[in-house]
Amino acid sequence: MNGLDLYAKVEHLFDFEDVMDFLWGKYIEELKTLGVKRVLDIGCGTGGFMQKAKEAGFEVVGIDISKEMINLAKEKDLEVYHKDLCEFSGKFDACVAIFDVINYMEDEYLKNFFKCVKNVLKKDGYFLFDVNTLYGFDEIAQGTIAVEDENNFAVLNSIFEDNEMLTKITLFEENSDCFEKKEGEIIQYFHKNQKLKKLNPLKFEKKIEINLYDGDMPDKEVLVFKQK
Image (tube, rainbow, N blue to C red; front, side):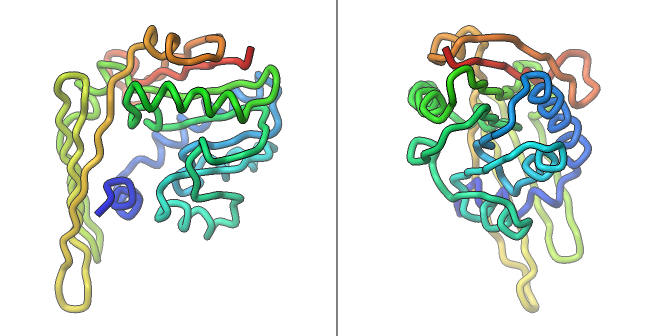
């Protein structure tokens, strides 16, 4: 099964709610500071950030390449589309890519992706995204997590080597009188700030260090770029 679609099925089982809410709050604070109104959420997932942004007074649209996640977001009465960014049209005051979206992209894809972001931004528009720090990958994200509820048992097993993290996802889902096993995997990449600035045609504005998991060092960084 497609790794991202499988992750969409198991995400609710893992206790990421407080972490996600904290990170979304940081984005909301920064967007308010920037004075933007219309926002595109790239890789919107099931729409959690979109709900929070709407409550804060923003006009927000979401896109995602996972059909499973888009279907879940539509249940929340959000304006979302199952589309790749480079096939999407519109103009926005700001774009955001939240919680590892950029980490899923290799260098060559990133270069083209940033060009597509530029195409949907208005003049003086902003692009905000977060990436895992090396500490975040090596010390926080790596390892095994197992969770279960009445009908499901899921395992995430993540190994970080050579600046890449491979996460294998296993789900045992109750089906009638037996359990159906589903498997998938996703790969994430560590990106240095210097490389991201070089690949991105937008102007770098600032970096915001974030500690999501109470570790010794920041495990995430939010980077802010501006349309030239």
